[in-house]
Image (cartoon, rainbow, N blue to C red; front, side, top):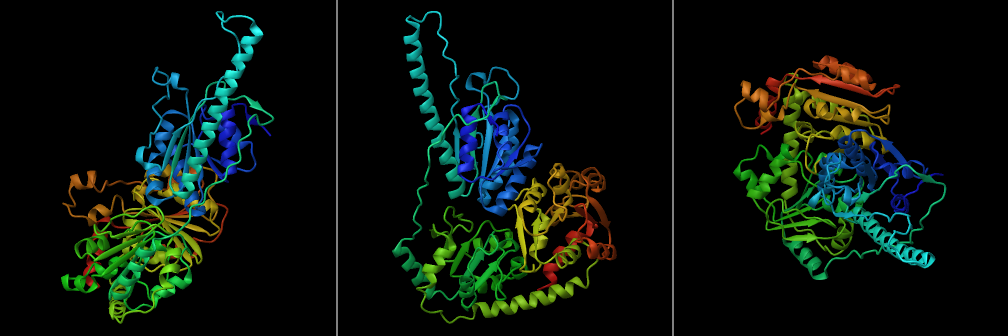
Length: 586
C-alpha cells in the first residue's frame, strides 16, 4: 500500500480511519494531492471524485443525511473551498456532520501574488461547529549553515534534537485538533473545517507509515435532565387542556413506537407532523397548512395551545409559524441535545436531551390524561379538509396541484423521496405520503441550490429506490449534479417545469408584467432533454394528465439507466389553482 510521504497527510488519513469516517468526497487539485494519495490507496475508504466542489459538498451532505455519520470533503487550495459554503451552511442548520479537509499553501506563500491562494483560515465563520489550522511539518533537512560553529557532529546533534522536539510538538498539536474536530462533527451534529498546509513536493510516496498516532478515547457525556425542571414539565403538562406537539425534520424510525402511542392516546394532545417528519399515526395531523390556512380568528383561538412541544429539525410550514407567533402558547418546550430555535418568540425550556430519553423519563411519571375534546374536535376538521381536497381535485385543470397528486400517489412502496425546495416541498406538504416512504428535503437554509446533488448522494447509500421531485429552476441551477459516475440505475428525477419560479406567482406582487416575468418568475424556454442525453438518463415528458399517467405506469421499472420525467405545467394558472384550493376546503 502507498502512503503520502508527508507526515501531516498520514496523520489526517489515519485519524479519519480511527474515527470511522468511511466516505471521502474528493475534488481534483494539486495541493490536496497528499490527501488524495492517502485516501485512495487505502481500501477502507469509499472515495468519490466530484469535479464541481459545490455539487461535491451537497453530494456529501446527502450521504451524511442518510448514514448520520461524518463524511469528509477533500479539496485543493483557493476558491475550491468557497464553493463548499452553501452546503456547509445547510449542514450547520440541518445538523448534519461534514468534515472539510482543505489543502493550503504554507503561510509564507499566502498573499504574495500566487494563484489560488486566499485566506483560508476560519473561512466558514460561525457556520461550522469547529475550525482549526493544522501546523506544517518541519522540513527533513539538517544541513549546517555557513556561520555555524564546529565541531560539526555536535552541531548536527543539537540541530536534530531541536528538530525532533519541535516536530513532536507539531504532531501532538495536529492530533489534538484532529480529534477535537472529528468529535465535534459527530457529537454536535454539524460541519467542521480543518485547514491543512502542505509544502512541495506533493506527490512523493512511501511504502510504510512514518508516523504512529496516539490511541484516543472519547469522553462520553452523561445524558440527563434537571430533576426540578422535569417535575415542572410534568406538573404543567397535567394541568394543560390543549397541548400541541409540532414535529420538524426527523430521521425515519427515530422515535420509539411506545412514545408515539403515548402522544396519540392523549385527547388533550394534537400532533402536527410534516412530510419531512417521517412520523406516522392515524390520529396525527399531517398537512398542517391544509388544517390551518382556512381558519378565521375564532378558529385560531380554538386551536391556540397552552403548551407547544417541539422536537426534530426545522419546520417548512410558514402558516404554522405565523399562527403560533400571533396566538402564542404559555409554554414552548424544545427537546434537542444541541439546539433550540425560538421560532415563535416564546421559548421557555430547552431540554438538552434526546427525545426518546425525554419521553422515557417524562411519560413514566405522567400519571393521568386530563379530560379534553381538543384532539377530537380537530380530527373532525381534518376529516372535512380531506373530503374537500378530494372534491377539489375533481374540479381543477391540469396544473402543479393535480400533477403532485398524481405523482405522490404513484410512488413505489417502500422507497425514498427527496424533494427540492420552494414550491416542490410546499405542494408535497399538502398530500398524505405513505408511511413506507421516507421523505427528505434540505430545510436548513431552504435554498434551491444543491437539491439534486443531495438526492444523488442520498440515493447512493440508501437501500431503497430514490425519487427526486424538483422544480425547473432548481434543477437547471444544479445540473452539474449529474456530472458523476455514481448515479444508481433505479434513481428517478421528476422535474415540474412551469417555465420559471412558480412560487413567486403565489406571493404578493404585480404579476404578468415584463418586469415580473424577467426578474422574479425568471421565465425561460429550457427543457431537460439534452442534459439527459449528455449525462446518460432516459428522458420522458408529459404536458397533460393522460401522458403523465401513461409514463408513471412504467417509470419505476428497472432499466440500465436512471430516468428523468419532465412534466410541463401551465404557469399562468398554477397560482390560481393553489390559492383557490384554500378557499374551497373551508
